[in-house]
Amino acid sequence: MSGPISYLASDLPWPPSVEDFYLPAIVHGTYPWITKFTALVWLAVAIIIVFFLLAYRKPKLVPTKAQWLAESVYGFGRNNVAEEVIGHKGLRFAPYLATLLVFILVTNLFSIVPLIQVSPNSHIAFPAMLAVISYVMFNYLGIRQHGFWPYVKMNLFLPGVPWPMYFLLVPIEFFSTFILRPLTLALRLFANMFAGHVILLVFTLGGFVLLQSDSLFIKPISVLSWAMAIALTFFEVLVCALQAYVFALLTASYVTGALAEEH
Amino acid sequence: MLDLAILAAEPKTVHGSLSAIGYGLAAIGPGIGVGIIFAAYIQSTARQPESAGLTRVYMFLGFAVVEALALLGIAFGFVFT
Image (cartoon, rainbow over all chains, first blue to last red; front, side, top):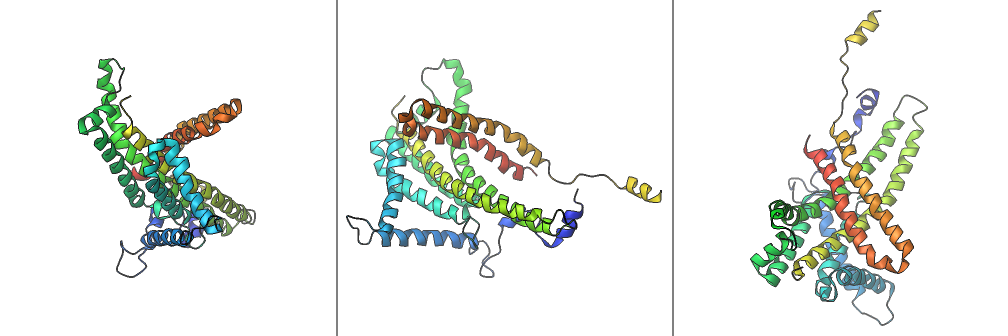
């Protein structure tokens, strides 16, 4: 069924594919190192550092607007993620969790900023690196707290289970704790950003494809397609914020599990 | 008559990837799961409004874990081509 549509739209990059995510280098000859994605990561880091430095340069008792925003963002990471999930001793993880939250939020929000409209997190490498940091951190904390073998035993052998069940449960627990956790942590963020970008591409490019149709009845439907693209952009804002929250929340939850006493 | 013969001789092929159908099937389970999670949260909040803050974290944890299945589906749809 690659009939009239793909023939007419031969000059459009339709349908959207994985190749749309491999953008050329900004400076010629620096292909994997200086692309739009790496530049955006540096930009995100610069935005975050400059914003928090400026907002907190002269802290006042009655906060200015920027100071209020910075305090709210950090307060959310501190109170609603670190303290609520880990408990009072989780406050020492508040800087890491708040950094994670802000960094993922800013890089995600690039996917809806006009003219940028793609998030670095739609490449698996960036979420994978963040997941590796969280994975190494919670395992290190658990091993430091309990020692290596007690920590592994605590995770693999659930108490109060008849012993023949361990033949079934130990591989499942190992797979879910030590393999699936970092994998899903990275994949969740990546797939959300990837799918979000593909959806926006489908509706934006789909509008042009419909506009090129021969039939006068199909042409106006392109307006509907673009309206959907705009509506889904607003939906993307929700997804961006939710994924940043979920990433920090799951990291906090894994840290809680690593620090917990034997249950 | 000749036209009809040419049309009949043309091979009838359907283009596209079967993984799109596979992803549709893979999304059923997580769809039901996410629905149940949010329904349970709304129900618990309606019955006991004070517990809203307490259960919100668990709702998002459960949502994230269930949603991972749908996202594994979308990732593997591109991997197994």
